[in-house]
Image (cartoon, rainbow, N blue to C red; front, side):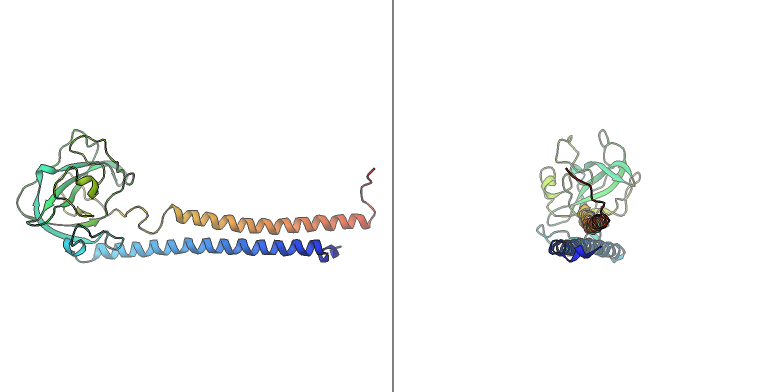
Amino acid sequence: MYRFLLTSRWLGGTVVAVLAVVVCLFLGSWQLSRFEDQVNRHQDAVRSADAATSGAAVPFAELLPDPQARVTTETVGRTVTLTGRYDPAHQLLVPNRTVDGKQGYYVLTPLCPGEGRCVAVVRGWAPGQATGRTAPEVGTDPVTVTGRLQAPENSGSNGAVAGGLPVGQLGTISPAALVNVVPDVGYDGWVAADTVPAGLSAVPTVQPEGGNGLSLRAFQNLGYTLEWFVFGGFVVFMWFRLARREAENARDRALGLDPVTD
C-alpha cells in the first residue's frame, strides 16, 4: 500500500519536506537562542543594578568626570555623592512622572559646585498635577547630596515630552532640554536624591528604555520561535496527511473502488 513512497515523485517530495522541517527547526532554534541571550542580558543588568545600589557611594565626578562622559547600563543606579549649592532660581517641575503606579511630578533643582557645571538633582516626587504647584523652598548653604545616578530621558519614555509646557516645567530631563532653561547644566546624567524634603518621595532608579536587556524585541524573537516550530509541525502534518490519502486511494484502486468518470 505504501510502495508509492518509493516513486521519484514521493521521494522528491519527502526530501523537500525534510529540508523544510530542518530549516524551520534551525530558524526556530536561532530565534530561541536570541531570546535567551536577551533574557541573560536582562538578568545580568538586574544583578548589576542591585550590586550598584548596594555598593558604596562614589563621587559624582568619578562616574561623569566631564560633560562628554555618558551614563551606561553599568553606571545607572550607582550611588553617588556631590557637594555644592542648590540654585533656587532655576527649580523646575517635571510633570507626568509615575511612581508606584501613581501620576505626579518631579522636583528638579540644579546643584552647583564651586567650579564646573551644575548637576540636575531631582529632590523628590509628589503626586498630582504640576500645574499650579511650587517647588519646596531650598537654602543656598553648601550641602552634600547622596543619590542614585540616572540616565537622561528620551522623548516619549516615562512620560517625557518634547515641549509645550508652561514656564517653570520641564518635559524631558536631558542635556538638550536643560540647556534651554537652566544655565551651566551640562552633564549627561542626573541624580535622584535619597534624602527628600517633607511631602516628597524618593524617585526610584529608572533604567533607560531597553537598557535592561529585555525589551519588546525579545518577545518578538520568542514569537518568531513559536512560528517557525509551528511551520515545521505543519509540514510534517501535511506530509502524513497526503501520504495517508495516497495510501487510501491506492487501497481503493486495489479493491476496484475507483469512481467511474465519463
